[in-house]
Image 1 (cartoon, rainbow, N blue to C red):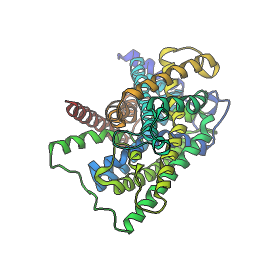
Image 2: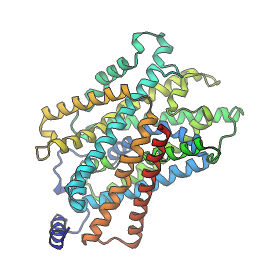
Image 3: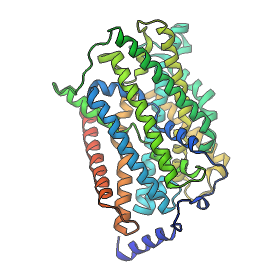
Image 4: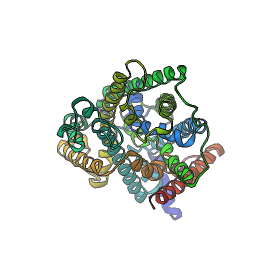
Length: 445
């Protein structure tokens, strides 16, 4: 970029800035507003989805000490990057993640960012449907809920089960055109996730007191080539756990009395909730099943655990979490639909003003995720690649690049600490991507 172009870009961004003050309510059209707790529920729901089911399996690879430390550290780093992104987005008066990328890095990077969001979110939705199929219809190693209740038959066919859930539950929720409309369902989904954690921890404590839990691995295993490859592959899955940045701006846009400070409080409360849920789930799931922990730990709950009412508790855990995923699905779908619309129908009127386009995109995206969920074998396959590519880019690479670019342009002045953080996030993202993709490709060979 030459000097004149740089100056023009800088003046454009500066011209969008508010007078001093936190409140920028007048700059975003907003017919309905979401309270702070509604925003917390929506952001928490964005984070705590299917990724939580893969965390016990990461503990099996990383060991309890390293696994718990990484869960905490990734939460802190992700929260820092989220606050930076909110700050830069408000500064640039952008209405979306792609918008702030365009202001700081240019239109080509905006397109790349939105493509990454589409790939990441579509992958997450496919994972949700895979888990629903695993739990309700079973896998080769584990029996599904429908098979346990009614025996084998057409009613527990995986493709049919996923299709029925899609039509009866997911499609009506996905048809809503405002994320604020999902605040109540998001609150219910968080409560269901907490219920899962409470029951899992309760069962784990009982078995621990009865001495029926063997000593878990505390540190990673470096004893074989396979163990090292597993270790490399699991790191992107951990980095994927807190990525919610693509939904930060829609939630901010509909936040009542919005300001960066208030949104930062939303992010901090959300991170604290998610770290607690992740730690409890990862630890209890791994302690319960040890070396037999599956990539999707829900499938482990198909056998009695050896305590009173364990069969009933198993059904509550599995069915409850299926409903949690059903309520999470439309929140992720909302961001997916918005970015697909921005890519294909750039410059058109908003989706909230075009019901036909909104419903059409919803139908196409649901059809795609359904077909993909019937072709991809396990959630591990999906998480390995999205975690090493799109998720780490959205969570770390783009926020860091935006900050460094705006600082270079003179729009903001980053402190030395902030510059170090930006470079650290870029280095982390590069390592995770190279290690993750390399490990995945080697594992497939």
